[in-house]
Length: 88
Image (cartoon, rainbow, N blue to C red):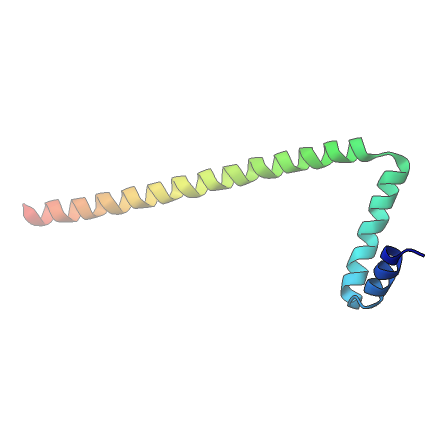
C-alpha cells in the first residue's frame, strides 16, 4: 500500500463526522458522472446555470444602482425645493 493511500485513510478517519457526511454524497455523484461519461452534459448544464445566475446578479445590481440614483436625486430635489422656497 502506498504512503498516499495510507495518508488518505488515516486523514479520513480523523475527519469530523459532519465533514464526512457532506463529502460522501458529493464524491458519489462525481463517481457516477465519471462512470457514465456525463462530463460534457454536466459541464454544459453547469455553464448554463452559471450564466443564468450571472444574469440575475447583474439585474439585481442594476436595480440597486437605479434605486440608489433615484433616492439620491429625490433627496437633492427635496433639498433644492426647500432652499428655494426659504429664499423667496
